[in-house]
Image 1 (cartoon, rainbow, N blue to C red):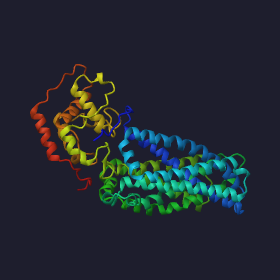
Image 2: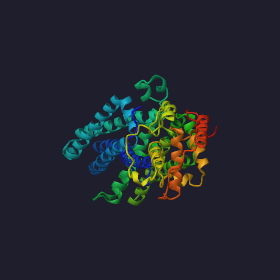
Image 3: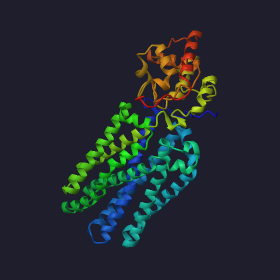
Image 4: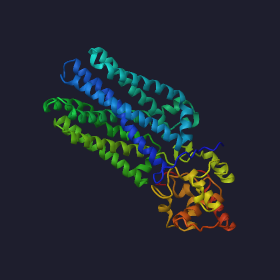
Length: 467
């Protein structure tokens, strides 16, 4: 096995998974705004050229400038940031996704290029073109943006529900996986809703519009919020497409994921209720502050949904294929024998801070097996989580990790490495005493650890917390 981890960066008190997750949520929100924005522009262009809404053309021109500046610039920056952080944090996952779906990625990139070209052409020349040419460019932009979602959705949903791809390993079975269609339709409705909410903000800040004109435009934009009534059905369909154990995590098995599911569902219900009852049915006028608050709720719904989608895969980044720490399930047994960091060629940062070889070994084991989801002191820190445990408790819990904490992968190292990790946590908990000396490797302790490792086995434990 080539060493599958490249410790390029350390994010201090913020765990690596939190960094990529936070960036991903922001990027997803922007991307969905761009997708829904294209559809919304086509709708308002149609209203303009058919004479159904006189100020619609003015809105299209003003809104598209905002869409280009926000989604093209910020979306591009966060998109590059996603790739940059991904290859630092989980290069093996990205490598597997590219290896399995490289032609899908290539097709998605052609759609993205078309989206950029059509968008900038409209931005540059839209005000000079006739209605037919304007609509052509907007349709090209909207189709390309949604097409990009189509192709990306297949790859992302494959990570959670690879389905029969696990047996066939064919690209079509991986791409059109069990959660592909519910996820695609759900994200489409979310994109439309986000675009409508952002439109309400933009309408309130556009110069030269009186209150009655703004009210007309807001009520027209609210039409893109109406499909939210189908989101509960699509959400249930999407959830039911997950494996039973993944559903169990979010429906009570994991308090954190249940909480974020409640945030996502609650925020969506609030936005949907206000949009349906207040804006569309009640024809209420909403000012910029209210529209911004609704956008914030939409962001909260996006954050909750993305957290749940990512968390439901644990302890995998690709279900049943690759653990979150970049170790294959088939490699665990061998690493138990050879040691997980025996072939680690990368030096420790600030190695001199660790006064003994045992602590240095423990730091390497932590960096490889734990640091994707934990810090030593900080977010999800091991000192805070295990500081009140005795050494024997730490040894037992880590040795049987996939059973005691089934959302975590099995410990994939030797007994010596496990003991080194235990000693590292104890040293950190004690405040990093400078006078630390090399701890002896008591054969009885190592034998006990090995017994616990053998009892745990190398297979992942039951991921259903209700079993």
